[in-house]
Amino acid sequence: MSTTLIDLAIGDALPASDWIPVTQQAIDTFADATGDHQWIHVDPKRCATHSPFKTTIAHGFFSASLMPKAFEGVVTSHPDIASVLNYGINSLRFLEPVRVNDQVRYIFKVASIEQKPTGRLYTFDCAVEIKDREKPALVGQFLMLAIIHSVSG
Image: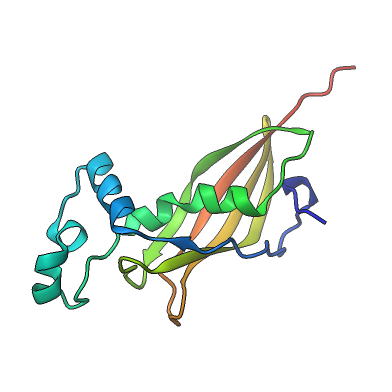
C-alpha cells in the first residue's frame, strides 16, 4: 500500500527514500545556482592536499535542497490534495559533511499536523543519512502544506 499525506498520523514514519548519489557535477551546479564557489566544494585538486576530508564536500544547503525530491519519492498523490508546498524549516543542523560520490537518503517522521484554512500543515522530523556512515548529514524539521481541494455543496 502506498502512503499519502491524508493517511498519516502524528508519530508515523515514512519509508526511507531511495539513495541519491552526490556527484561533483551536482555540487558544481548548486555552486553556480547559489554563487557559493568556496574551494572546499568546487576544487578537487586543492581539496586533495588542503582539505581535512581530502575531497570536495557538498554545501550543507545542497543536502537540505534535495528534501523535496526525496519527499516526493516516498509519498504518493491523493485526489483530495491539489498541491503540496514547501512551507519552511523549523530547525536545521548540519552534523556531518557529505563528500563527493557519497549517497544520501532521507528519513521522515510526522511530528505534528495542523489544520490551516487552505489545508493541512505537516511538520516532519527529518534526518539525512549518508550511506556507510553512522552520523547523519543533517537533522531538522521540514514543513509541508497540503492544499486540500474545496468541496462545494
